[in-house]
Image 1: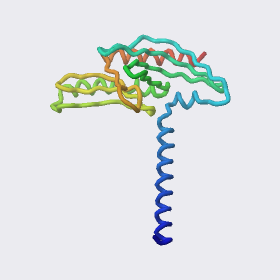
Image 2: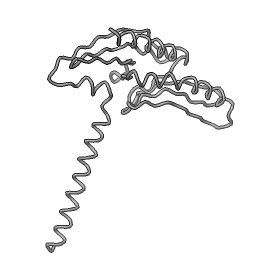
Image 3: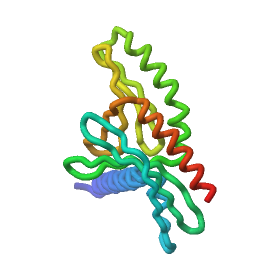
Image 4: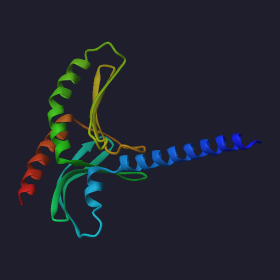
Length: 186
């Protein structure tokens, strides 16, 4: 092997390694939720205050809900948390206030679309709203029936929570908004 071939291979190896490292770092940054970023304030005291809300029901179990207020570095933020116990551990969504407002705005459109999608001749229809952190609220239509769901975590498996009805989720979102606004003032 001559010197030029060695340099070319060595250069390619360095480029491949650095791109993998960059990809890995980007994936780690993407996997942190807004709550994770806020609560990772090192060098300061971080206080968590939880306020329970009603549970969400499903034919496969329940999801506990709460508002979590976090105080760190002289600031506070509030998040809606939806937690579901699974066979392999806990699945949890932490929804920032600004994302919750977007979800609430999207719900009337999703509900309207669901009504018209039930009449479609497609074998399967899926429609959803996705937040920056990967939380999803949506539905699918199969055989003329609509089924609503929440996807609690962006990565992993067994993250989907099928709702008994969309009204309970919509009601939760609205109650959470009111409670978050109340806690933000105090």
